[in-house]
Length: 569
Image (cartoon, rainbow, N blue to C red):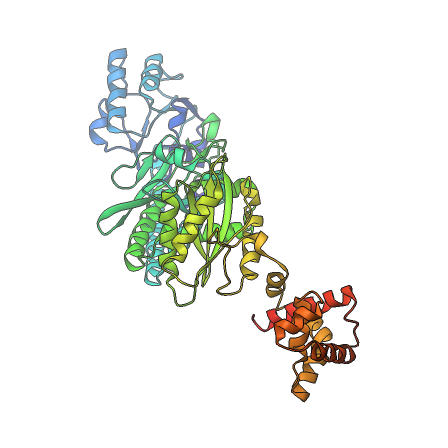
């Protein structure tokens, strides 16, 4: 390989551009200078054409870098304009004029005509071997084509393997992002971002203002660059109808992105597509990006057919779990992600609830029912499975909207067809940052609720104010310290009843429930007062406690409630 073609300036995976060719040593030694159309030097070069004809356009098909010494250029301005018009109309990549033989400066008419048509005009100050240029560039083009075919084959094989393995949307988007080096987003027809795989930055940058930006990007037929930000979009179908689309955002250049370095002698680098608001311009998409996105869309279409589970439901589950477990990297990222799913995060008040469904019940049906009922109430909600028998509900309400009627309606919808279901609610949060706390409270209420525990007469859900001593101890029943306390306080009495067949524990319970009133305890237990006195003296002797002490009675009463919690009462 000669020095002139030892390395290609074009990164693998994108076409050779005018700027790349001008950077080759074989042309760089001629001192190239971009006179007009600097924004067009990112045009791909399909071929190199040497011409000394007055009508070279008739031999071109588009994408050619036209090399000329200027000998055939017409003398009159009208003829020059016609010459340039024909080149521009056929789609020539650029016109390269050697300033050695006929001209020593580019003719004004030629400069004006090229500028008017946006055709890049490049001048060479020194003699260049045009034949060597064609040999070097054509060798590179053929090499790029072979490399592109090999890369395309690898992309097809990778996505075929993912499809055969039954990969879901998250895994498919991850593969697309890793292959392209760009952020990839899956959205449904109402412009909700169901999955986002960022590349080279946080998801926040991609998802901020998603619905507004997405609606400004109108879909067309097939894959193409659309909208004011230059998104690359491809449709995703389900059972022959359009279901949504997959979007590749302009972003950091990956294997298929151009380097963006300036060309020689002031030549501008490749043009850049717009990115998210406030982001730096991004390299334009290449053919390999299109291949990746089309294969992603095809794999997603097949995944929809083979795994008809609602992807909206999966997206809600993932977003809720990330909120509950605080897996977002920043509050801004959480806001962007939740808003992109269609839940308003600005000027909203949030209420978190957990719904525990009996193991025999269908959680998916309860999930659908809660989602529908939330819409009827005028609230917006995310509903998703947090555990095998536990659903999470995040309600977004207007600041002035009372939350109890909404939760009451949701609770009745959950309880109606599913006996044994329990709804537990956390306290309202004024912003999204307080949602994890609201979920923690709802979970603690649920943990303190015994199966089938009676509800207050005025509502159908449990909340924090319901947690008394008994429910608190029930929630803490697995804590060894609670178990040790109950055994230390009552163990000797339990052993005595077991050995002697007595019922001292029942007598102690009746006495403590009667707040130390022996007469009431005797009446409640169907015993004589003397019998109660005798048993209480026996209890004091076995436990070594003074039942006349209010503090000691309190300790024993707590131990009894802990014992009840440990026994599942």
